[in-house]
Image (tube, rainbow, N blue to C red; front, side):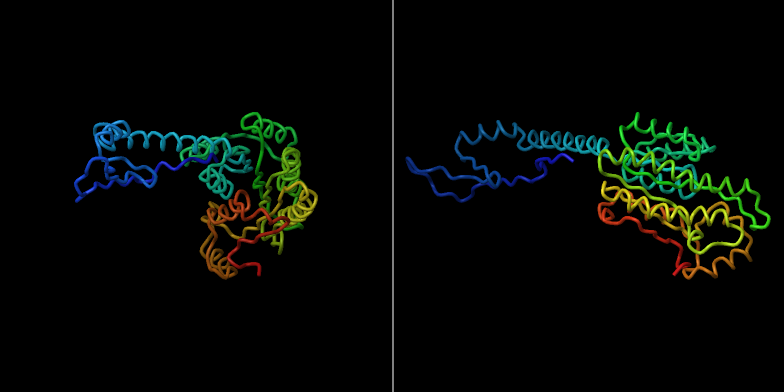
Length: 327
């Protein structure tokens, strides 16, 4: 950010009162104009005052000061836009991904909003980001397909020149008990939830390595830590993502690239809203805080890890955000 000279200091002007009569050769009394400017009270002082402040006193100077302040503010805003971190958020059209994209957009980031099918929702997220003061573009693509990932990264680099932060959030579920799970259900979840982050992380790291700076956040799940009945595929993918995170963190630490994972528990969503009262009561009984988490709470943690300077010494860690489910 460009440093600027202060234009907000008030100027004090005190008149001399009760001054003794002056004899020939006596010095004219001085009046304090500012901490560093003195003006004689003689005829020349009136001329100087008129030159500096105009015939109406301080108004001309105040106008200049206001113009300087406006220019400085414009420079600050322009520098913010130039220096703003460039972020890719996968699966950002709804839920946790949307909340993350909005939080980072509000913080002034340039955000690529990735989506698989929900183009209308993604465009709305982009509009909200711009309304919050950030910049946004959308990209429709399947993160489990190498060609789509390559195209996504080319798009963001062509638009903003680099990638500073990657949030691997895109994920799917295909729940079934293991004895009934089809191989296609297994493969679909592993491909999107594990191969997708592998492809995106690899692409981001190539860019980040060149400038020796970057942050990558993997959105895992508490299911990857403790398992869950009917989610063998999802648990395997999220547990794999955690191991992947720790390994990549070790490989890229020397290049000043931090890699961390978050593991959300039950977060309020369209799905939880449709649960029956009995099922919801059973779920909430497993959460010490007795409620679902909110997407904005998850987004706050991601924002800290992604752009806060205080998180620059954190890497290879898994942060549970689950109301105390896993303690």
